[in-house]
Length: 261
Image (tube, rainbow, N blue to C red; front, side, top):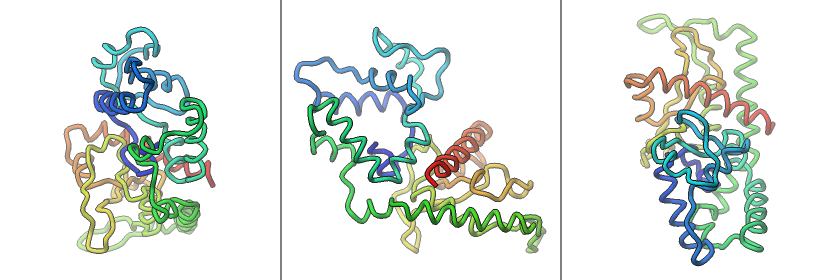
């Protein structure tokens, strides 16, 4: 939940998750209990809340000895897109989830220190920025995009040194609203901490299916990327695989916001 609340990358490799979870279990788990970071990762994989990506074969059960499989496969794990977006955009949903976890695993409430460690004690202004306002703005902008499509605006050309399809400013802004200021590549290895001259996160909105080849000019197939991920998507050896992933991610994020509308 902390990753969603702070718009950190949705997925993390098992080897990284293992160390993070082990540290938390060591500090906040039952005294003398064995550290089992594999258990929540694999138990949640049996639910709609969680995803495991990048592995081969069936996912083993959480009980037994699944650690060798995890170490060998090193899958990327994290919340499903819809759950991530819900927790990222709704302070109420986060509060309900924390209360449920506290009642089930801590006999009352989650320790404040644990909440702070995972980033679930955001400031009032940060929490307010993730209220329903971005959702309303996103759908208002999507409506603007779709109205322009209905008028045939997406078929117009703009002339510079060459003709190229018109790009919708509303679509670009909608994607930036949806991103919450974070790179939307679920495998992003690190977004620059710097900001642009307007104090905004350094993000580049790109069409997964190139607009120059008449890819749809709509947030459903557009993605906000940090400069590093944009370079990989454009010039990297793995760009085709990344584009396939980004198209799924853009559609999933758009659908997740649709369910909240």
